[in-house]
Image 1 (cartoon, one colour):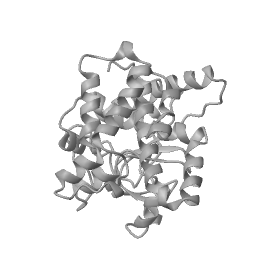
Image 2 (tube, rainbow, N blue to C red):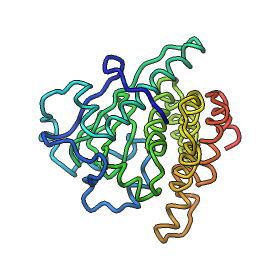
Image 3 (cartoon, rainbow, N blue to C red):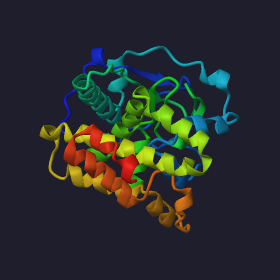
Image 4 (cartoon, helix red, strand yellow):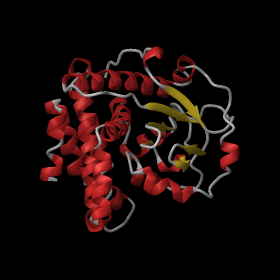
Length: 289
């Protein structure tokens, strides 16, 4: 996509982690230690951190992780590496697009904060976390957490699908932010608590809904889409379906353990948003699955 350069005055960006330098960014390696690639893939694109991050509490020294380096402004942070610049450009476009959608519907909009992760272990608004979890959204602080080095690993998992695959990552996590500020995320969590047997199915539908929201953003910016962008996005969605990930890991396909949906479901959800550009069409996912 031919995204415009971000305006540092219209985005919320920061770094989180220790005092080290900025990792990754076009040739760097993800600092995920011994975590296998299948684990990263299984949780990427929005597993509810309120359910997963707490398990990492003993992984590092929270007190040490609190000692972040000097605050850097958005311009410096976003130009730290090419992937950071892409991510900030996507954030700015997402802000503009969703603010317009909310305005059209007479609703109040609130921007998320993008946190670039600088260490393998860090504290998020949802508790201790690890880059091995992949990018995620934390509803507690309305923050999107991304280690730009993850994009190198995404290229290994999904094949080098171009910049649209990376924008898809950001747009999906942004979709979880929209779910949070509209109250949908809270409704889903309440339904999961009331009916634990349906909790996994509801989680899958929520992830597909976020995929659709990612498509809505792209569909609303068709003038910026380049040839093969849609194909790149659909190929990325297909490569990270739960069934595909399980097969590639040499495991039996187990629908009861799905967290994000099959490759076909993820492609269909993204395509729905892309083709309609209408966020209300995404709600049909909860009606039709």
